[in-house]
Image (cartoon, rainbow, N blue to C red; front, side):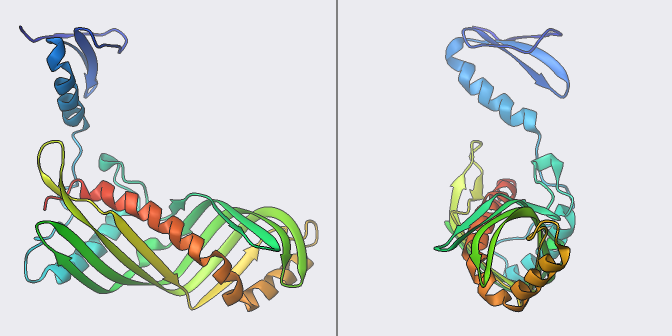
Length: 272
């Protein structure tokens, strides 16, 4: 019954019978260990090899302090700046632009698809309101965020009748949302991670996105006829409230799903 380490410069392989080989900080090692303990050792090394933690200057609040809402307001503004280009140490991707997955909206007389959606100007958001209820067992927060301009760039497909136009087109699309109110409701329990530390884990994330105006610019709506394409886009923009209602629920759903995962990735490094 022993554990033996020796440096190994060959290819990385895994033999679950009596040893495993792994790489930590560029160094290869062979671990020889009794088989019944191998699984626990693998878990431990998976945790250690990550070495992942929030940057030292990432603001974390005392969740049970009397000024928690004020502290979270400051932390929110700071986090937006730090997350703009992402934090590779914790696998947090950039949020400006923020990449969403595909959306498809199917109605009786038309279908619209958006693909590889990039949202720009997320980091310009200003926190107008926050209210939290935090206990040793659960977390709840409501936030209102105002954003002067959100620009969404995506590939699009459009087929069917839209207003008075019969359209079958695809290309690059741009949606510009101005003076947008972004409301977030999120909640979840306190859990214990693999090391026994308590963390918040969100199980509910609901977002509402209410712009004061939206400009639509679908490229090549009428291929080869830019003037007609511009005229159609002008009609869509003039009737933006009707068209935005078409995409609103799906946009909020996709945004909520992405932000739930993104937030939980950060919260796993935040102690309760």
